[in-house]
Amino acid sequence: MDKIRKQTKLWKIRDGSKIRICDMSDGHITNSIKMLLRSYKVMLFNEWNQLMAYIGNDPPDGAYWAATGEIGQLEGILWGTENYMGPSLGEAAEKELPILRSLMLEKLRRKNINKDLWNKFITKLKRKKHGVRKKAK
Image (cartoon, rainbow, N blue to C red; front, side):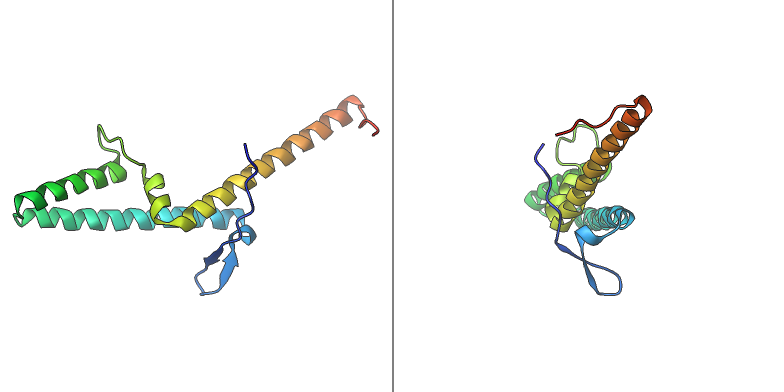
């Protein structure tokens, strides 16, 4: 796997100031991802609601079929309906919200770094336990 670069894009926090994604805490990144996904889901649900109201007003045939196709797409993303083969909520949100991808990449980068650090730590513990010294270069 290629090394993931540190994400230096800016994230605007509640008080209006900006912070680099790479400077955010792990919990802040996780909560930001969850918040973006929730917001995106609400936006899709509102769009679905408007389309349902539109087809209830007896639109022309072509518009009706276009709206029902869009409704099917939204239902698939929102609720994963049967026989739906399109993008998941996360994949759809990534296309609409580019900052979400940056947050997810930073989370993945940190997970990989933590995994590497953990493996190094375990290796050191095993060496100490068995009296093995690091080889001289």
